[in-house]
Image 1 (tube, rainbow, N blue to C red):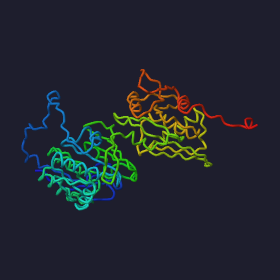
Image 2 (cartoon, rainbow, N blue to C red):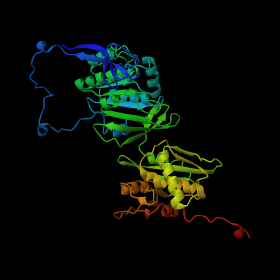
Image 3 (cartoon, rainbow, N blue to C red):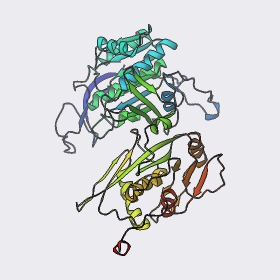
Image 4 (cartoon, rainbow, N blue to C red):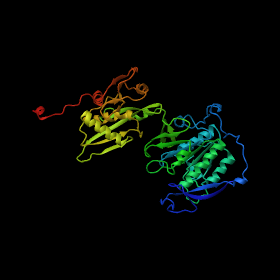
Amino acid sequence: MAKTRTVFVCQQCGAHQAREMGRCPNCSGWGTLVEQIERREAPASNRRSVVVSGAGAPLPLHAIPSGGVSRLPVVYQEFARVLGGGLVPGSLVLIGGEPGIGKSSLLLQSAAHFAEHVGDALYISAEESAQQIKLRADRMGLNPERLWISSETNLETAISYIDSQRPGLVIVDSIQTVYIEELSSAAGSVGQVREGALRLLRVAKDLNIPIIIVGHVTKEGAIAGPRMLEHIVDVVLYLEGERFHQYRILRGVKNRYGSTDEVGIFEMTATGLHEISNPSQVFLAERSANTPGSAVAVTLEGTRPILVEIQGLTSNTANPQPRRTVNGYDLNRLQMLLAVLGKRVGLPLFNQDVYVNIVGGLRIGEPAADLAVATAIASSFRNQRVASDMVLMGEIGLSGEMRSVTQIERRLSEAAKLGFSKAVCPPLQTPIHIEGMQITQVKSVFDAIEAALGPAPRRKNRDDDE
């Protein structure tokens, strides 16, 4: 029979120590010892030979059945889209996000929906009491009979509840606030978080039930705790957005059962999170089309094109180092675009503060938005507006050339559905015809800005005044 003991393992050299020390005596590393539980097997003479014939026995690949996975429904289609179609039985899902972003609200809604339509759901909250969760449920209008609430902080006791009740869905909020009594370290330490995740993983696989755990994030936005935590779980999701902004974006960064390119768009209201089925229409609802410095980009999030407004602003500055400020866009890519605009287009931005904002709190990472960002900046600098019915897409190279982007036809079709009739894009490899859409193909960023804004206004000089 296996026995357990608590040891301290160095994360640098792997040396085992019997007691906690600030410095590893083997590699002299400071703060590298992490507490963990070590299992020691019985001596070989006391063991019995075992014939492997269970589910873990090796099988040839062609003999393994390839039946589809039956997924469990979740509260919103946007949530199901990010998960890959729904919850997979036996999976361990990790959701991270900043405090107050809406993680607990989304999971409480998911648990209530599951309890109403599928079966028993157990919500284990180590951060809030049962009364606090009840108050939130009343505010959100949730009162299912098959939803069980527990405010247990001892993970072993919580697992005993799972074993006795056998619910169809378990939510643990959060992994940093539950603790294992065998470990002497505080809740939230590296050893506690890793061992807790491993035990929940075993419970999920043994009972074949999905378990969702909440993870805190660091100042940099990464999930707190050991990096190994993201390797243990099956799915890693991030809930993003400004805390005081109404829109939330659920993004997948790891998914063993589906794509990681999909995103879900939600709106935070007084009654919880509500999905947005047409995010393009929402992001463009408050657009001021008659103001210079505004351009519409067509980005692709997974398989869904999303139209989003990009705002650019330039302002004269006397500082030797002009400011470059971005919101929802990569600062290094903005610096590159400004260099291209100065060298290839001739825009003197060396004495200009430049600000770029992605409306709606969306973060754009794909290079297809380069042309819209560059056009918004040029529009503000020239004080010329982009046509209200025009969309722009295309990647910009260092020599000012326009590079093609993926799935242009799908992007243009989405733009046409929303009433846009003009598009500026790189040269098409195959002809595309979208009814009601005038497509302008350009080879350089100079030609693209001329097509979007028209010729640059002529600057006045003394001869003109005379």
